[in-house]
Amino acid sequence: RGISQSLKNRLFRETVVAQNEFLYSYSVRGNDGKVESFYTHEFYFLTGQNGLVVFLNYPENLREKAKEIEESIKNSIKMK
Image (cartoon, rainbow, N blue to C red):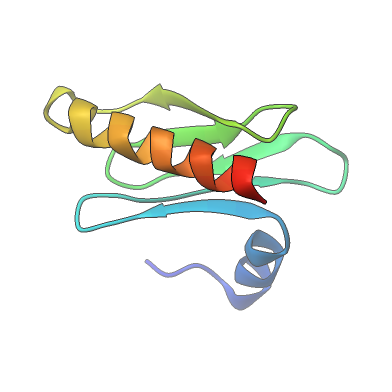
């Protein structure tokens, strides 16, 4: 199931993307300031008020990989 083009355009305006062979997840803040989350593979995250990523849930077997991704996303945000 693909993501519609209009949603893609919106996602890439303000988004954090975590992607590797296990995970592909998006989070985006809507125009009203509320956070909307999109998830695949039972892996969830959303951005907090400060733009850092907060992980809500991930399967036990991906826990370590998720921690690595969490750190890399936080580091990339800090560098911007």
